[in-house]
Image (cartoon, rainbow, N blue to C red; front, top):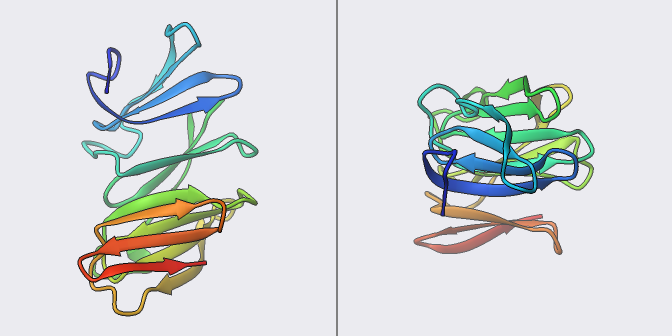
Length: 167
């Protein structure tokens, strides 16, 4: 899907109860439109300079948008369009491991980031901007994708070996 204001493919579309439609473009830009499609604001390079989007999620209670590029996770305050912080997964996982998925946990104080190498899951405290917990899947040399199941509160990794889950 393309959004005329994104100038490229749309990676994700989210609904914000006050701002309206939040279109996250694969080229790293975030475009916010009202329900009629009129652009109200945008956040250029939301995942960092020249970064493409890997995953996004919205914490409505915090009014915060998490935008993951391949290397960093950028947190944005929706109403002010200001950067709330940057989370650096390389601080906990060396060598570098691309981000596959970001999801706010139900409390919205914590953000889960799932990574390609070794099935690594990092739980971030988004108020302190630090890692709360680091987990690693057994026998998971390389994950190709990850998905969060809200009903069971589980993160599933998929790869050539099969699947693995974290609760």
